[in-house]
Length: 137
Image 1 (cartoon, rainbow, N blue to C red):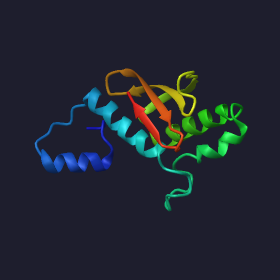
Image 2 (image 1 turned 45 degrees about the vertical axis):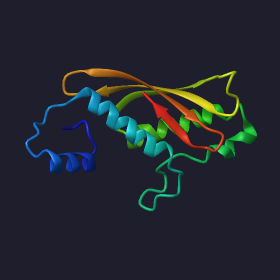
Image 3 (image 1 turned 135 degrees about the vertical axis):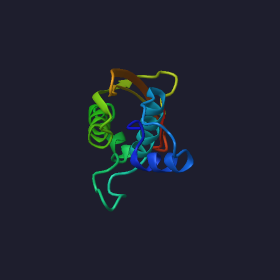
Image 4 (image 1 turned 90 degrees about the horizontal axis):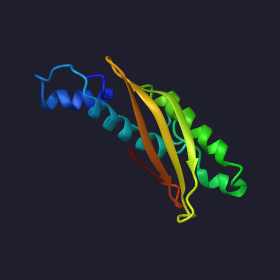
């Protein structure tokens, strides 16, 4: 049952108390995807319990674009490494898109460590012109 975050496990156990504690790789990846969506759409300073939770407002980086891309990649990688411990060997890479110049596209490559194996994962994130981040896996 380690594939889910604590609150997800509690909710699931309320619905299915007889569930066995066997890992399901798809559930792990889906849970990580949902959590990344939360992390990357939270602005730093907006969570009282952890001032560094979330990412900086990427619109602040527009003035130094494209030099700011490495700073954005670093911010995303640091947030994932700190707040999503199920992902290891996290790499972030900017993907240039000629057809969509008003949004930023990043690739997130990492490994999920399960009881039995390492699962390679690839997520694509899109930062819209409004600053909202969408992730698909």
